[in-house]
Amino acid sequence: MKTKLIQIGFFYTLISVAFFTFNCSKPVPTEDLVKARKSIEEVQKNNPEGKAKELLDKSIEELKLAHEKLPEEEYDLAKEKANISYSLSRLAYQEWFPSAVENLKKEYEDKIKQAEEANAEMLAKEDYETSKSFFEEANQLISQLEENKLTQEEKDKIENNTYASNEEKKQLVTKLEANLIVYGSIQDKLKKALKSATIAYETSLTYKDEYFDELRSLEEKFNQAKEYKAEKYEPEKSALIQQKIDETKQLIDNNQLKNAYSNLETLKSDIDEVYAISLKNYSEEKLNEANTSFEKAKENVNKNRNVLGQNRSKIDEMLLAGNEALNNAKNDYESENYESSIKNSEEVIKISGVLNDLVEQSSSVYRRNLALEEQRKREEALKKQQEEELKKSEQEIQQENLTEENIKLIYTVKKTKPAECLWRIAGKKEIYNNPRKWKKIYEANKDQIKNPNLIYPGQKLRIPKE
Image (cartoon, rainbow, N blue to C red; front, side, top):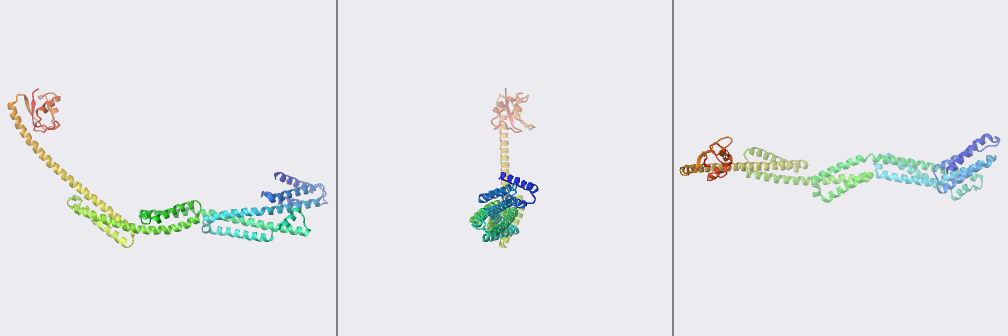
């Protein structure tokens, strides 16, 4: 093809040369040659195939023959060949047009389908309707063309240059030109339809974020419904809603905004219904829970009122607050103000928990105080017992001092800081001057020392001789 284009260009140059060098008395068919060449170029740029390509090749050959006649000054024959070339290229153009139109129609149908899926009929109505209008106009022209198209016999006459007369030739070429004009209009309408469909589609896609926002808003409400135990009260419908939410996300992602819009409308209705049912049931459930928990808390308070101590006034205040919140919850529920009823019920439940904590805290303080009192009594009893034992020990030591010859001395434990211990006593100069001998003192006084690490001021300790 490139070679033939070069050849045409070469012969076109010859036309110019011939125009100025050949005998001016004989008319060179320059206009016819240029007309044929331009027609060929118009067809060539569309890369025709099949029959259109075959006719184009014939047209190029005829134009080549026309150029070859110029040096021989056979201008009439050159003009005839140029006209044949032109007719063949126009016929080639017509043969190419149907497939081009079908391709454009398919491209348009694919794009308008995308636009419709993207809800362009609603979101880009003007461009969508303009596109449909152009396409309808193109189809009307196609119908008109069908009524006036060339028969196969007429095509053969043009291709083979076998006209019955010049008049017939003129009529067929005129009909061919008229058809090409219509084809051009069809192509133009289809291109405009495609362009408008593309704009409608792209415009519709600019609404994707709004669709996502609407879906997120509905999903938030559904999540709130789930917090109100929608999956407990409406399990089947909740499952279907979640499935439709996931499906709608996918539809928007895939630019199928028309189906997404339909889903959003359905979701809005379904979620509102589930939300209302769940809210009412959850409000009732919370009210019952609040009533039960508050009654138990009051019972707990009354049962342990004697141990409340300094928390008594605070607990009484909270009982009043809890009672008021419970009444508000009941009134809100009766007036179908369910969200407020839930809040008040939750406040009652919270107060009930605090009341129980305060009662437990008071009980713990009470039990701790009882334990401390018991410990104090035990310590007093122990101290009294130790004092008695010490007194008894002193008496025994005094008796032993009169009889035992191995006792070095009797040492009275003193109240000092730090407190005296067997280690320090043994280390005293007047005792052993050696703290490591503390065990001797312990062994001699086991009757009054239960724990070698625990001695008391005033105890009389026997100090054995070394």
